[in-house]
Length: 270
Length: 183
Image (cartoon, rainbow over all chains, first blue to last red; front, side, top):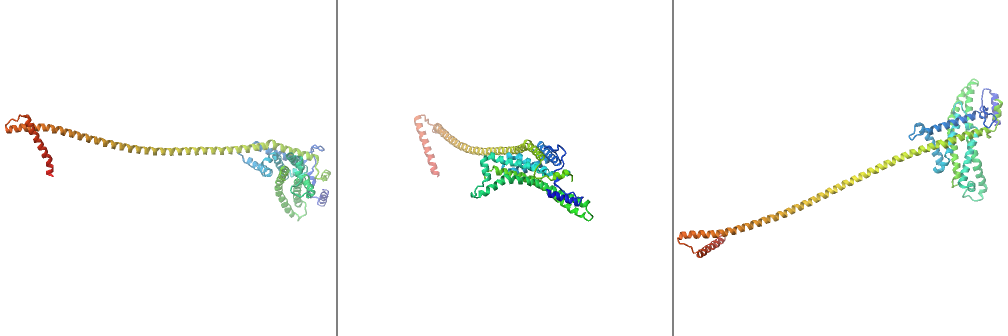
């Protein structure tokens, strides 16, 4: 990030009015418990707020649940069935999905709410844009699928099923076992975490870049350059719409891949 | 940029700070617990109840339908039974009626024959008695008449009886010969 930072400094030096987006936004100053493991800054507060929001929404929905649903209940049921049936049961099968359902539902709705804060005015920051949350989510899934595989098949058979592809001539295993090992134990969790983190971080940076450029062209740039603010604003608007999609899509992908990894770990047919 | 920002920005964004991990874990744990302990059980309970209610409704409708079918079958069976019974009764009545008529005919026939026979017997008896009476009376009358005419007493009964008998048999033979003549 040194180069990005240097670039920022250069831009700021050249054009003093332009506030370029920087990684610093993801690490704002702490305002509570500074220096302790419970240090609270703006991003952490946004996470907690999103957590409260999703918990209240789900709890109110569950509390008011009736046999004949209201509009709110129907909409929530639709969303819930999208996760329970569309993601979990379609991937894992009805029986196996039961055990993992709370985790998958929590992951989907949690990520959706932690993501969506980046589109909410005055929050404007994704809770998943700092690597800690993607890592914690990924570790949870990682532990879950290895644990599920081991408890389903026993340690030896799980490792064997994970690393040795059936129906391959044996010399190929010299090549395939390390690849399978890397895939199952390194690449899968790494990509799971980075995909979510990078999408959220870059989306935020893009939004900030577009809107701060608009602001710069409109108020600080020399006469004649105001026109460019229209272009940058249109770009920002487009990114905003795109981010609305990505916010949902990343939650969906994360939940779906969690199910796929769990299924790969516990299913017999390799 | 303040020094704090520069310091923060120089951190590797892929290496999390401890507070980052801890707040993330707390948030995920809260969402997970609420979903696990409260939301999903309520959701599943509602879905199950709804499925049960719908299932119950369908079963009830099926039961009512079955009952209606049964009642209809019963009704139709009764109707068919009634029809068969009526037909049977009609056939029986017809047969019985025919028999009664036949019996009556036979009886009437016998009665009429009996009456005819009785009448004939009676007629024959009356004819016989009339004949006997006539024969005796005609004899007496004839003798009385003849004695008056002849003036001779024909008191000798033996003789007079012979005469009368002869006379009557002459009459009889005459009367039996007459239809032959007449024909």
